[in-house]
Length: 217
Length: 347
Image (cartoon, rainbow over all chains, first blue to last red; front, side, top):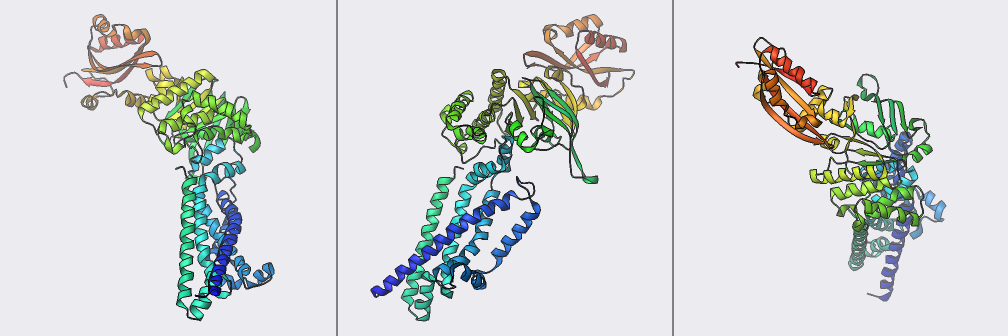
């Protein structure tokens, strides 16, 4: 294999990591508060807003039900507006974020769901404000579950980012399609898949380790 | 210290509405340990959760230390809740925090400084016997230790009142005893007013000064604990007491009991005597003076908060005149007499 080819693989790997890291970080920053909001606005919860909660839930579900490949194409005008282009790594990050936000939100909501309601009640009995309940009870108690959810998100983003390659998004998926499939170079295909497997394994075991550290159950 | 005035709580509306509490009046003086006992579903839990407004009563007033909590806005209510510590059946500790940090939580919520928190948490850990557990997590503790952490946490904000929601129901008898001892200790040392709900007579017997009996959302009976254990005023109260004391007449006798006396019947009575009476040879004296024969079916001596209580189920065998004379004699000695029924002499 030529050194140019190796360089290409190296760059594609960095591109994938860049896409996953940036979209993962941004979707966490937006998705976690959204998940908290979905939880605390439920009927009977500390900031109950049943109507707003319904609307938010429906919007989240819509976001989750659109297949990524369609979402990617459908929001091209928006992507162009944000990053000035509809192809390349940066352009792939926009749909990745849009797809991951509702995903993160539902996983966070699920993690919060695991908290025994008695803990919230105990905090209320201590005179905690809703914000204090979120920051001192809900988030710390759900920390393990949230990290677990983010791990699942990152792993999903790795595979989504490879899909982004199909529409010229850059990264390992792009490389695999162009060289492995279009030019029929099975070795390249194999290498890109192997790198993706290693990446997913790495993220998963890092996530597992962080969950273990966060959980005292 | 705590005063409930006409407190009602209704869930839902219309024909399917559930009346969990019906017009409850209750007063707990400062420094008292007041128990509310009842069967599951009677409304105990709703009652105690109404006191700190975890449940908002449908009507009525909750007055704690002169403040009407039902009239307060949410900010004032949060401040008032610092005066009301609460512990729960399932402890409700934060799994993500150490013992120390769990106890520190209410102080953090109040914005107390780190140094001050340390100064206030450490004595509480000492009081509850948890000093060596400070850096452990709740998952590493036993049920009794968890409840001790919860008690320390409830005391951190220096409340005037402690609410205990079935605090010992998830614990084994031995651990229950040690937690009750701790609560009594706190009541004495800190002068804390305690309101507790329970379905266990043992809890009432061990530490309560007064007890209320709740049934179907109504407070049907209220008495000093000594009186309640001697002579409950209601049927439910008697059922609770008899079940607790395991003092029931033998089944074979129960089947023969008749409500009204007949020509050839004699009464079966439940006698409860306390104080000096326990030490007096009342039964033999009764037999001698009134001429009735006394057949003792069951007897028991209990110690309830330093008061000795004697309980007996006996059959009084004699003529209608002598037995009624015997009953009068018993009552004149300040003995609580309950006629359970009458049995045929020759049956």
